Structure formats: C-alpha cells, structure tokens
Image (cartoon, rainbow, N blue to C red):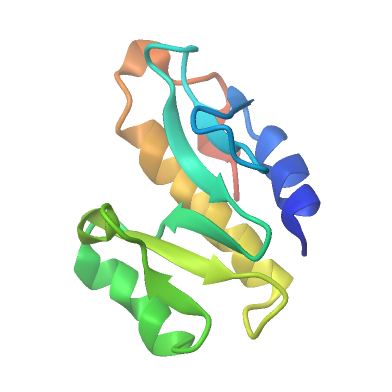
Length: 125
C-alpha cells in the first residue's frame, strides 16, 4: 500500500476530507465538519502514516511490540496514543487498513455527537 492508496481508502470513510495545513507533499485526512470541527485521523507521508493507534499509550504500544522496526511513537502527540507506521515494510495492507479504520473510529468517537458523520459506526465492521 502506498500513500495514494491510503488517501483513497481514508477518503472513502464517511465525512472524511483532505487538508494540507502545513503545505506538505501529502495531506492529512480529517473527519468532522470543516474546518472548525475537523479532526485529523491520518497523517499521510510518502513512507509512513500516522494513526491514533489506541485510546492511550499503553494500547498503542502493542503496535511497537508487534512491529518493532516498522512502528514508532509519533513526535509531539505520541503520548496520546499516536504511532507512525511504515509503508512497504513488515506491516501488511490488512493491518494498515485496520489501523486506519481504528484511528478513524477513535477520532470520530471523540467528536461531539452533532459533528459525527452518518454511517461512521459501520467503518471496519
């Protein structure tokens, strides 16, 4: 799976949209009403994707244990359960898809109910 595949997958989730607040080569993918209530659920890069890997650091550390060379704690926001997952490495496409779906669900669940998109509960079911 490459960055273009990740973007396409993420944009298929209800209420998701691309944003490029830092003028990078690849966008971040947000969910929620744009722009004020939108929250990032995927930081897409050429070689990796940043995801909310768990509700806390303890759960997110399971990725580090399973993929020690391909998963790392994200700088600045890692303490909140965010990891960076390497693309084209030891993490399979199914696991990357699962990680993106979980990141989406965790972020949407944190939105005010009025900002949650219809159908969000079905992602990954």
